[in-house]
Length: 111
Length: 115
Image 1 (tube, chains in turn orange, red):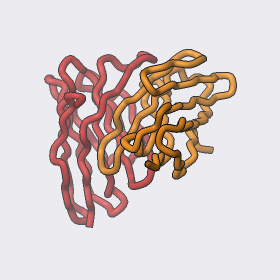
Image 2 (cartoon, rainbow over the protein chains, first blue to last red):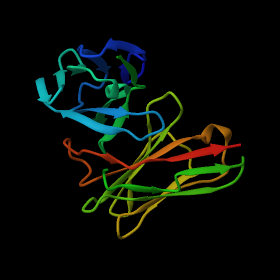
Image 3 (cartoon, each protein chain N blue to C red):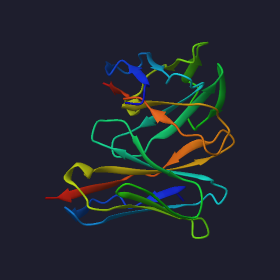
Image 4 (cartoon, rainbow over the protein chains, first blue to last red):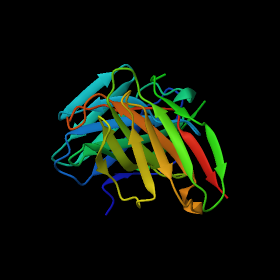
């Protein structure tokens, strides 16, 4: 069983709508959770980090964490074509707090 | 821009050759982690260096080795290259390992193609 799972997509969302991205994980001891955005051929770029249950908002982005259910999600409000990218979920685990990654969800925002 | 730099940007090698990839960490960071990202997959942890010592290793064979220098820059060496080593190699720097709120910042990556 994969440690971090994401729907590979593609997820197609109309411009201006809310995009919802989900991620589940298996390590109950995980304490830190991250969402990265990756454009084709580029390196991952940190969007949000979340450490406590509940919601965390930053501009158009909201991360939601539910440790009991072992899922973390990312909402993107007022989606723009520039949001089209692959979104990677990562959790910090292990004795050296390495990042464990999902395979990513490809998001397409249609004008 | 994260302040993390990597060189070279692209590299083409043939099977059996050796390669060295380089990374300069963000100013003030003392930890470097290396990841391999195959096409269409998430990054896979190779190893991490903290203050010039290896501080953890993923499921990669010994032909993947590394170094960290006193200025906290780092090298990733891969010997006896195989076709499956073709990937984007990512370097990430952070301040202190072993803390749950440790955030890693990525360089632009090195695209390695093995023919």
